[in-house]
Image 1 (cartoon, rainbow, N blue to C red):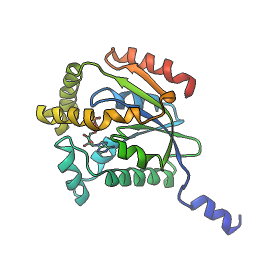
Image 2: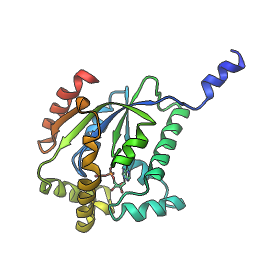
Image 3: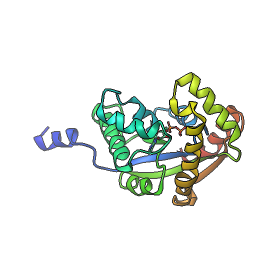
Length: 208
Ligand code: ADP
């Protein structure tokens, strides 16, 4: 190998990532579906909520993030997208993610129109799965249950839950209209978990 060849091997990845997007309100089941789809090795589950929560509480940046997240608001987009990109670069450089052969399944991003614009500089979106929820009462119950299981502050407080739905309606819902309609697949997210999974597989099998 010549030294120029080594540069190809160790240089940071500069191409665009291939991506699928799971879209839906808080508690719609985005994480459950994303992690099930990613049991297939060709896809990598990428949950922004998990990435942000995993940052150690000793880190100064975590205090800033928490002040938004605990209220159900979004931290600044540049900060979130910067952390997200650094996380993926880390997976690439430690050989846990191969962008040439794997697709990332985005769960929790993009969450507003500005994030769509930034994200498009990093990824090519191949498909979008929208988990459609036409009644929020059942998913508020799901969030309360998740609060006990995962100990999430933002799932436990009714005012924070309400704020997250308000933010979703105002900022996140318009994102769907900004994405290419020909790649959007819609599934009723209020069915039983196995029925949701069945419909997701039926919708996505032709594009996976
Ligand atoms: P849910 O979708 O059920 O609200 P998440 O784990 O996806 O749960 O998100 C939890 C919180 O993390 C959000 O309320 C927000 O504060 C923060 N968060 C997650 N993804 C993003 C993002 N793309 N941009 C800004 N904030 C985010």
